[in-house]
Length: 377
Image (cartoon, rainbow, N blue to C red; front, side):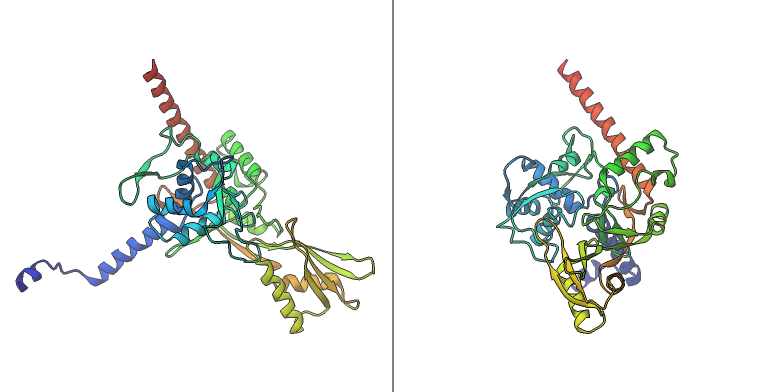
């Protein structure tokens, strides 16, 4: 008995086994979870959610369905992970302060810019946004490759035949093993103009592309301070930009100065920002503020900061930029998957990858339609 056990044991070098196992794990996280595909701009969980909704007919204009139903379909058919990961993905795609172009139309409480948690999935309802259909058009015409799902019962697309450059339009962020990505969102019209310019002239330079795509366009708006970081990121794939709240110093009817904040940097929690300012006032790290009140509502953000009569509004505002998240650094790191391999892209390379993907989709669609036409005759 002992001899048979020993004969079935294969000696291995533990150092080599650790290297191999860690590499397998790292690539699984990189390809299967953390990084978006440069062609459709989606991570696997986003792609599976949208594909599941499309297959179930939960499209724009149709009736809303419970989020729990979508989550159940996704984890049962395509994504064998926890329901919270899938629901968090759906919630983020329905938040106007998270995505520049929302992909899910949500009904109910989907959280807020103050960090409030969304309602449970049994209470909220969802359907696709109109723009989401542009990511799925022609999926049934053999335009992309499909692979078996986790149990081999169903087929899921490796990539979507998207008609819009979603990676640049909505951006992406994620932390993998040994690498991370942080791609800012952009204005879709500007990105499409850049794609058309590339199609007209494939030798176009990045400086020329920046005439069409001048910089990121965050869902919470705000201001980008300076262009050096944008230019560096677009040329090399890495850079950092300073994003500043939109604020102005105004004079009230009583002659007192007020700082009015109407836009915040991307991913800044408004409630925590107000708390931080109040804390700085209490600790006397910022002088010259008599009161702060958050008057934000469904119409938009409005934070009023009252300035003491012996203080200068512009000076106080500069202190707020320096000491709070009214100014933040957004580090750009444009890493995405290129046919399953992680790669650092510059602006032109992302556009080039999208245009090549669209060409392949159009060719495959044309061949499919030609074959169907011949079968009918």
